[in-house]
Amino acid sequence: MDLSSLNIEELKALKRKLPGELSRRKNAVNAEELADLRSRAKKLGYKLVAVKKNTGKNAAPMYRHPQNGSLVWSGRGRRPTWVVEWQNMYGKDMSSLRI
Image (cartoon, rainbow, N blue to C red; front, side, top):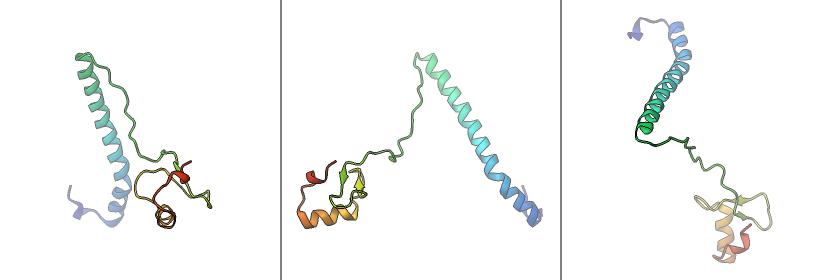
């Protein structure tokens, strides 16, 4: 497609339509691929089950600040500043912060 022949309004309209069209096509391809995988699995005697992507957003808090209960940490990822500061002041044992 030669975009140089389009005027600014036509380019803006194309820009607005593009995300929706990309999404529709991606969904169609994904549906075709899923159907193909299900067919192959069935031929081999397997059943496909949905797999949920783990986003890490649902981790329950494991540690709570003793003076400020709104400060919590799941124990995953980088230690928050309040945990590091608490460890520096009171030592390395975090068992007293455990919920």
